[in-house]
Image (cartoon, rainbow, N blue to C red; front, side, top):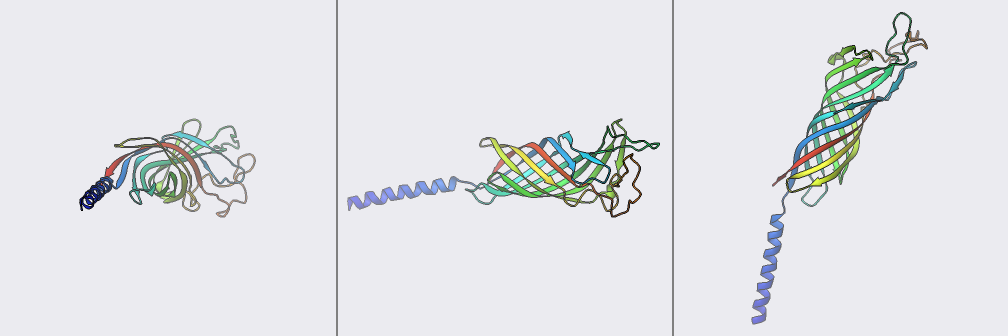
Amino acid sequence: MKYSIILLIVLGLCTTGVQAQTSSRSYVMKVGPVVGLVGAGINTENATGRKVNPDFMGMPYLGAAIYAPFGIDTRMGLRLDIAYSSVSSLVRPYEMYAGGSNWSKSFQERYNYVTIAPMINLAGFLIGMGINIPASGIMKNDAGTEFEVRTADMKTAVDVRLGGQITVWSSDIGTLTVDILAKYGFNGVYNDNSYTIGSAVEHIGFPADNVTSKTITGMVPGSLTLGLSYLFDLKF
């Protein structure tokens, strides 16, 4: 009888310990700022007679992220980014004046968006999409002259994105990660036939004789960005 009582006490203590350990584990969401450090973009299409080159820029995005894991003990979950973001490219020739052309310099294109990007995080591997609402656009030549792009000529751009979220520091407060993202804006930047430098040109820079709406290319950006995020823990 004495041994039965001792056994029951031991089992009771073990059960209490397990329950306390289980109750101490919390569901942890994360929220915090995200910032792009550097990015590179290029138009994946180019019209006949034109050449495209990558454009590099600092701070390609700035915003916030929310991360919701699928459970308490999993490294997989949903991440939602809301940010002000940019895509860019260079194209040549950038001017055709008085019968001349300039192949040594480029026209810089930059387009800015309010971006909503849902992604799935699979143990640090990110896959998702971005919905990009036009905010502004600029074309600039090497002399620094800027030409504003009408947002009415820009469409809501959709991209697919792949990348990684690498943890570099973590504490009870939050987690610092390095984010690497490759994006492809498959439906383009412009509405149909609105891309002013999407038409073919001859070898001396004049517009080609056979230019029609079917031969005008679009601005279909691809980009690679490197950034940081710091997400604070929210325990429930």
